[in-house]
Length: 276
Image (tube, rainbow, N blue to C red; front, side, top):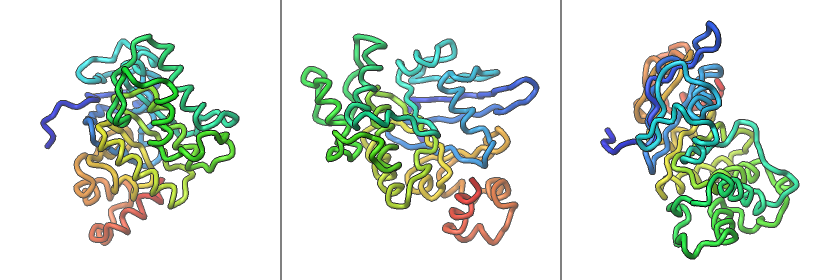
């Protein structure tokens, strides 16, 4: 059990659309330096949970706290200013701009929020605020996401995997305290997914808290320290990936309760991934 206070605490979150309760009493914690996974079948409420955390969708009940601060009255852009970063299911990049310029957009958005900039995060290791220029920061982020050799290449000329990294780099430019990733492996091949997993591990090792929604359960099992499973808008299991993978309710939700699958982790991972 982690006794350190979480950077992001979702407490009893519920979202209702008219008479439909889309998310009910969801509680999740994300700690600095750890990746927390949020998985579940299609329609389980994962993206709705993300939208509620970011302020896109109003809460019907519950609280969202960032480093102890209640975000309930804050708008989406105010939450982003506080340090809630996000990427989306649908790739959102400027295809005609270069990799470096896409990341630079993230810096400019951050500057538009406030003249005060957050302290340089650990994933910009070796830089200090007094020495770091905008160009330096862009270069560091582009290097961190593994695209230094493509910095001047238009994003539209890159693979989907590389474009996903650019979107991630732009989010990092805002210097988030916690980063919400909504299906970042969507459209990636096996090599690109492997590269993404390495990058996420490096960011977590540098102190960033990550909440990951992803249908590639093999990736989730590999990179996540903690895992929660949603089904019909409710958390049905939480724990380590190993604990969750053998949970009876999770197997029932995904696989209809086939007992034989409990003993073979790769089969479970394969079947869970195929369900999304």
